[in-house]
Length: 330
Image (cartoon, rainbow, N blue to C red):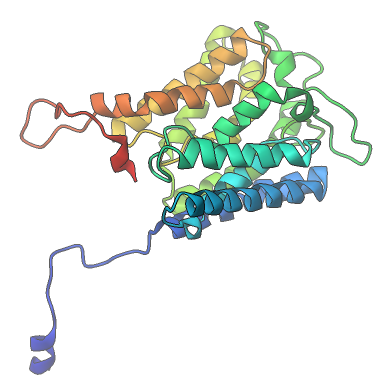
């Protein structure tokens, strides 16, 4: 026994290590995307799987070809491109033409992610930026929302009836149960069932992939702002929370490591700021897509937020006065 003890090696703590590598984290996100993807497939059919697969394939191919042509290290094994492609596929309606997914995936990977330096160095969330770009330039093709069912009847999103300055819930908006479950609801494929998005959110929280205060503060802030605007009409507040891509984006996009705030207080400010901006865009404009613009604005502000809210070093009265370097986010 004494001989074995002599042969044991000692070292500094921590002595227990967990395999929290980038591929492992991205795999957990892909697993968490299964519930909303399953709901989208149930409501809109097999074409949803085609959009997801096409987004993932194009994203991986774009990353590989760009890195190969620019003599960079091939990083497709980190699976971050798979996550971007899956998010983009779920961020479009089932009626979106296949080529819009391809264009969006190439834009997300090459322009938004790789040109700034790759994973960890991108200022903006690639999937969100691609979704906003497609909405800006290809709206006739990616805003043709339909109701679930074989007839594929055209439909407006509930946000078109509760945005743009109104303070009451129109009769054309589905009831809160249908909004929460995703029944008889037109919109982007992945945003339909808030119940299954919550399942994915809980999974990511339990696996400690995301900080729970980001999606929770994001959603609650948006609800509070719309509530203040409507005189705290609970139906109006809940309809905004369960409509559009708020739940989906708060869970899978606002929690992105690379483009979000990193400091503890910065995460709080990031989430609250995104919620305020989302509510503002929804209230002020009838143009859907407030979530995307809100997240992109907060992405741009994230380094400045972190710089101002850098944790104070123990024993010092002031925060460190240093310039936050995004290159260190990798």
